[in-house]
Length: 89
Image (cartoon, rainbow, N blue to C red; front, side):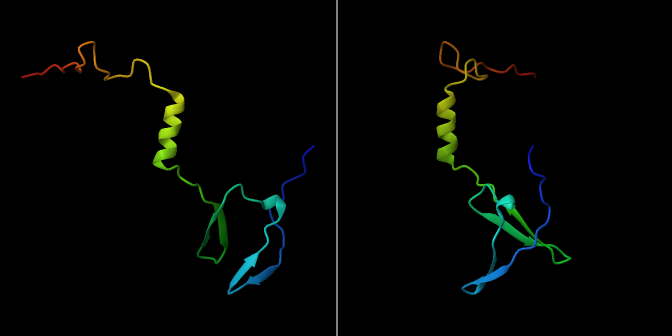
């Protein structure tokens, strides 16, 4: 049986140079390299993981892994030309 998830826990604040910091307990740990911090109208501070977007090189590498798409629409025919669209006059 898994332990119940805590929704709130009191933690201590400390100074790190000129910044105020808080130790995040293990049960609130983020699976991220950085977080976004914001404060709402009531003054509540919110933290959420920053989702890192993949770079163009990373996306292209992922596409290479999948290989070419068979029968992709718009592939040139045997003559190497794309089919012409019908024109209505």
